[in-house]
Image (cartoon, rainbow, N blue to C red; front, side, top):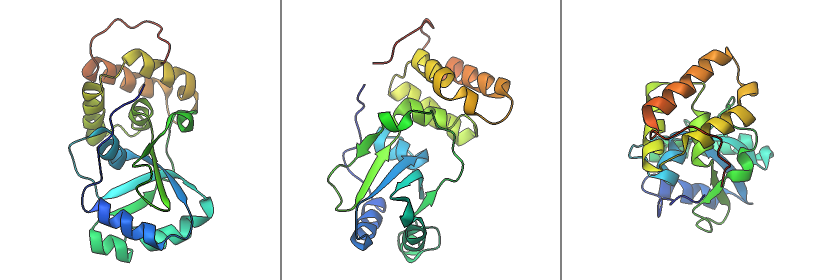
Length: 192
């Protein structure tokens, strides 16, 4: 399933990433999650001052990237936004197979990849703060996400890897489905 991506970056992200791109000497791939991913890929109508990512390829760029674009860096001070590597993130096991590239060909060296919307929703399950619930509600409604696909992916790729009482995560997912997803018959559905 393909979802419409936002047509282009807005300020200050456009200028921040263009300047960062000019500093990089080789291609660098970011696997983006969080608010930036929801805003840039799926049109979430809120701002965010950080670009969270879980994977950086090649990984040996981490220290240099933190110096160039991390919180407190000259770029961050100039544009009031920054990049942040998320140290602990819970995402479905096969998320990388479903990622989509944001703004392909837009930069010389930066390649931004975003989790598909189901994986992005599930990445918010453990934390489950109010902002996460608002993001989930927006994604579920706007993209007409299928609760059966979400539940299946949770059961097959994520449930056993979660930290904490399984009942807590099961109950959170159940609440989300009841509160945010269109009321449809829950039955076994194969993913498209």
